[in-house]
Image 1 (cartoon, rainbow, N blue to C red):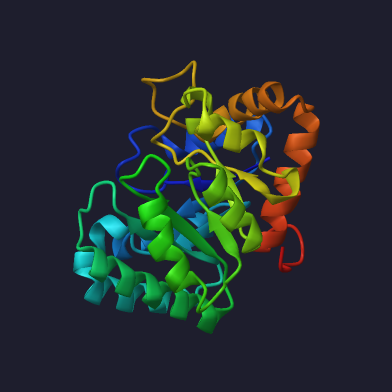
Image 2: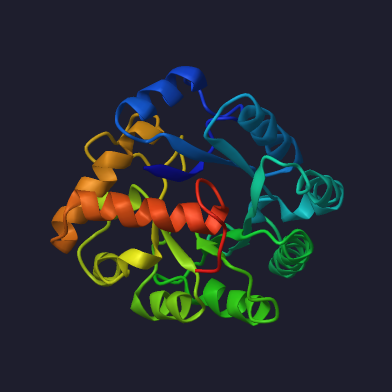
Length: 263
């Protein structure tokens, strides 16, 4: 299995990253992507990936920090050329907290898309709004995305059916993490049921979003099987089917263990 989104490489991860990798491999999670959220953490992701087999990096600036974009984006443009980098991001729009002005978030998102286009890399998108279905953020996101239409994944999906439909129509993949295990019954949980297996990838967002029943613990890649089991029960599918399809999807999108192709 592949954890397509983790932050075990950066200073906010309070556990032993080396042991965390071993614990993940012991339960079948033998590939991970370390995702950068600013210039410093992106460089740390690259360095961590360079020291480990089956670990890769993504470089980007989180929308929370779009207001410090000038120096960080210059650094990210340089880091994107590193051989260990398999994606740009995480980047996008976060209207839930509005830690950075929305217009600035949009401009920084465009900069990420230009870097991705120049380097022929997929993009890891962060999209979260104040509306229950995040439609406010998605509406602005699509206006920008449709000018570039890169391959990529919507990380930490937690929206509803209309947003899922837009994602699928745009050929993007859907990142599912521990949120699914504590989502309330209703439109959000229903959307998870309708993600086609051929468009789903797994992630943790470690150290955040630990799945039930381990809420309160620091999240790790070793909890990916918990997410798989929950999805299998929710969707009446075999765990082996979810493991196989999500791993193939991730390998294709990020070019790890398979030739990179459009999905």
